Image 1: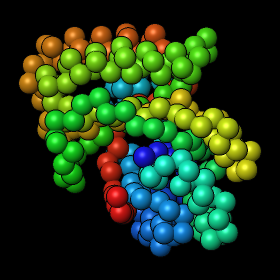
Image 2 (image 1 turned 30 degrees about the vertical axis):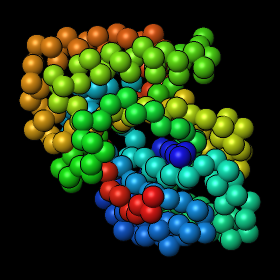
Image 3 (image 1 turned 60 degrees about the vertical axis):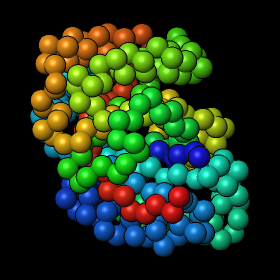
Length: 256
């Protein structure tokens, strides 16, 4: 499968509560109504949580602040996605969704890009986590002197196993890297919608609850692990153009 990631910025004239309510209660069902026409298999909204932990993640890395959240939409294949965008019915549905997005999203400061997921570990057996689960969402921009390929390789083959080595001590439940693909299509999103430049990918790390997040099994190992992870990230991440914050997922549909 492939996954589209939509990094959302809120329109300045829309209040935060109104933004989240409209996104979840109005736009979400609208996407579900168009799911067949656009051939989408799954759709999840991740709404940013207002927690002091966000500032801790940002400050230690020197990152940008959080965005209101991200949308993720899955297709069976890149070919299915392209078929949906070239079919008249799919085009009409996507145009309707884009018009609706303009009501609450600051499109020119938002980002859209296609990705492919890489599962690093999953201690849940791919089970659905409960509504109390939290997700650390890391929006990644590579260092300017690295190629996309070098960034993805370092992230996957070096950094992924490093995270896994501290996973149980810190009560991580699941870890997925989503690497950007199809640069020509991503550039087309920018050109057609006036979006900001796409990212190089996202990391998502799930915790079963806030209690799990705040009470690692081995606090000393967790502290040392956290420092090691930040140091390793500096090898391939441009911290000044990346973000890391906590979200909570809302699954709108899953037909997969």
